[in-house]
Image (cartoon, rainbow, N blue to C red; front, side, top):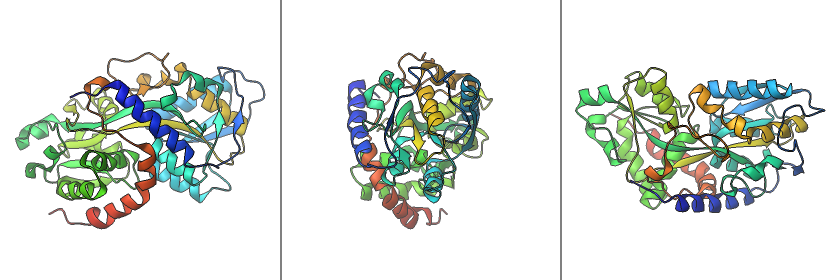
Length: 359
């Protein structure tokens, strides 16, 4: 089970170039910032509200650290990707958020297409490999996560099922209503699952066929993409579909029956982003937040609260509990195609898959 890192980086580069180009507006591009650090910058005042797509304790750690470093009072609301785009669109002219931090960038692409994000060229973006940032400065990547299976070994043993190592393993009749996954309309994680099927199987029709076969295995579709790992950890199902770093977090929090595995037939991944919301009324502080989020110090916060995403800033220390990309078979995930296809594909999922009985 392997993938060449050069192939992975090349796919990211092509996707980010197109993803940024698909949205032109969203605000006037700004340059400048803090010359490498947001801390102690003169003139910062007011407050910021973050739409945060990471784990709640990581959102709390991020906002607290930024407040301590800059004096800008910063709060957050934890939202899935679909919820974030919906709320940004609903309050486009008078936004309730200043920053979107965390969550897959195909969701950011959907926001860009609706002119919900504002371009900003951070001086700290130079430290981030070009593969992880928008060439049009609409967003920057702050971490990478890989989609995996988060299984409860005790439940699997009771069912007489091996730890899954392929997508077809999840359609085993022994796993009927024994898998937890989120809904792709609300969750970026779950949409990554859906788009992964499109890529690995060669088209949307084939993906829907697989999802129909997989549907009887699903206990319920959760709103949040992180919840399925907890559902598996509590022993309510055998398998949860999450980004692998979430499963590692739950293991460390005491759900010791959990084991991580990856589908050998290919899996998707996320680049988690940070961006300024269009029409923010505190642009200077928002720019400082983006500057700060791109630093190695900010990206090193994750492991302190059990979040083990791979950082994009190469100066950030790598924790041994982070996924090793060269050990996983990653699909050629096209973020621009995923973002463009999401509205119609999730509607089709609702009509053809989600409403079907699972008995």
